[in-house]
Length: 297
Image (cartoon, rainbow, N blue to C red; front, side, top):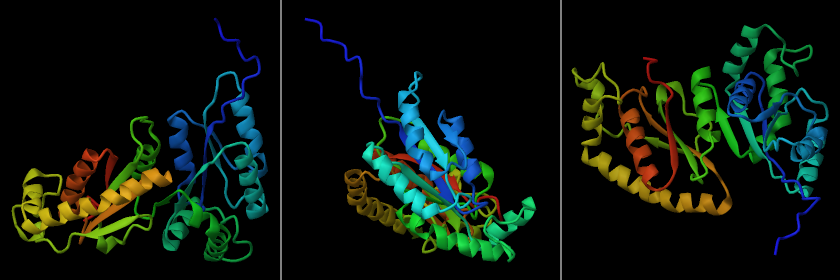
């Protein structure tokens, strides 16, 4: 017996990502990456139109299933409009992921000055005044964001790589992680879920033949990971992450950042990041590595 065809099927609601955050923190770059990955992206969308956009996408003949909207302080009545828009989306069964782009004040000022445009909220004041108002306006959104990306120490290529790692589609992966090496002298990444310090290990910098190399070199990696303390740390840290990974799965959290630091971000942190990434992959995590400060010395 042939089952009757439903002439009025219920449209499948698309996946939706909201891109927001501080001006000059990388919203446009993030939007461009998603567009390159096949998402339909709308810039500077009034929050009131979010529900209508998802409805149109669900009814489209081509079945657009991946939408992204850039929503930020340029829109008026931001909080009231966004809160109501999120409620309307929830009523349609759509739970958007919120990606928040951030950077330190000094970096934002430098970037804003380089484009020679006023900050959208500075009014008659300074750029810093606009940044302060924007931070206050977006504070609650940042707290509830699914992904926070600190772009202070990232160039455009590194930011593109990180966003790609988060959103590049792999149906077999239920959790994605970025393991980021960094140098403490350049600052701790603000978006890290976990920060670990490799400065307890002997520094290859003081070994003349290893000094010019990096943790990507097998000789440096063997030196760092050959330390008994490195093996103990790696084993115990990975063990401690297992219940965290299980909890992330249970709560529907799909992304985490682990920052691995040493003094300059060249030797110990790079070698340990690579080793940690390999161990996480064995636990079923889709892992990307990013060496934020490699080459800055």
